[in-house]
Image (cartoon, rainbow, N blue to C red; front, top):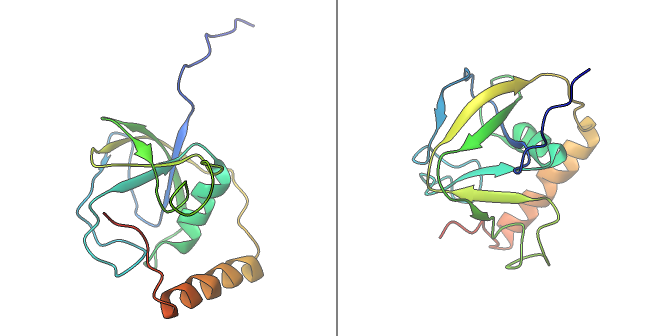
Length: 138
């Protein structure tokens, strides 16, 4: 079995409830799943499957939870909601961009968090909202 060279960039994931196909672009400008639900200035991706699963589970909408393998088309930066502005470092390897992500494929073999874990996270996000702590969207 031949081995292929290792990629210099990790696979990136995007969790959502949107129904997308390979080649589609995920772009800023849609309503955010977080904060005040304003039109998003940024789109988000992660190099960890667990963070993508949370993205899919917490996404707004009634569609099926999906995780896509995506490729950034421009520069990405640390997501300030999950990095040094709120937590040390970038343990979830979460990033954002103002440039589109190209959908490469859908990842279909992944394990959801338990319903109790999802509800606990939703309750936590609601408490933060009540405290006036919103997602960083600048």
